[in-house]
Image 1: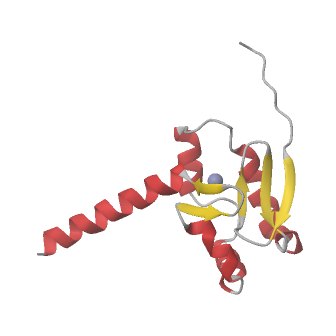
Image 2 (image 1 turned 30 degrees about the horizontal axis):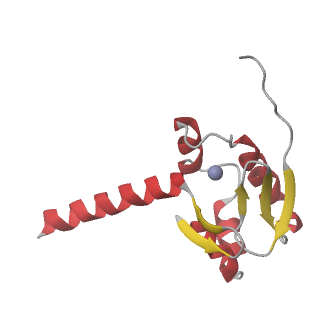
Length: 123
Ligand SMILES: [Zn+2]
């Protein structure tokens, strides 16, 4: 079918995480727009996520550095501990229950397997 509803989702500013696309809306940390050099590429990144559960393109997009300046983003997160939940593959949020990021789970699984492999190899 050629029918495709492609509208810009609502943006909700919150004080946790960095940015998450929930399909109908995007949650973005309320302080992020103060840093346009971070806000613009991150918003662009989130808008590229589809409602599909998983696509290889999106996994690639999540593991390759985007336009956001990594060091600046790390600095942004370092002084805001509530943004750290962004880097958890699964977390719990009041009213929403468990929120899980499939791409993060895949990345962490590979990291654990890789490090586990090195560990076993060293034994
Ligand atoms: Zn992403």
